[in-house]
Image (cartoon, rainbow, N blue to C red; front, side, top):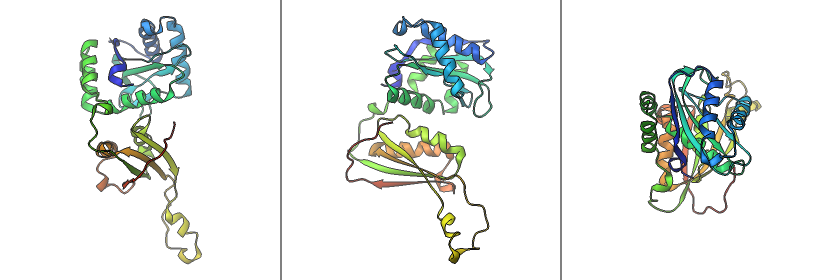
Length: 271
């Protein structure tokens, strides 16, 4: 399912004076329950599901954004909309900043992959700082809807230049970037990815009597490798997304990307 197709213009609203997280969740529940897609689901049920999800951990994404979401039994389709607040709201975001932009996703329990893909797509388009500023300046739901559509381009709409796949290894020694980098690959139908825990070679060498005493600096405690199989035509855009998060790779010594040709790819990976 494409984000631009799932987005419902009737589920976009601007509230000038919402002041706390509970009011945000209640407003989203009221908006969502008005949709014909969940005509048998009350606002109280939606509010309860959103609140339960927040208990697992805040959906405050950072940079002034929170993405409340929940899965509800009996719901057959996805509801995607956005609430924009005139005031900053304390949403327990990971960066400590108040949130003003609240895209939300309400979906069925039976479609976790589609659910994850939609959350990832929302997170990606809202990384753009100028886009977020445009949304905050647009108090009209119609204008907000047009902005989102204009910034949403499905990978399925980009014609493939050639068949094939590449393998990407993303080596990460900076925990600050890990979650954001992982979201690049999360839920995409065009990639299969997994995480490998890693250790520096120095960690092993310093334990060998032959090399004892060569290293006095602390060993990096955070080492992760994202291994992903990516369509050929998406490799460059994936690397650009990585550099959008952590800056030019040529200037970093804590993030490294390698790209390898693959002659055959058989099978696939689930979530």
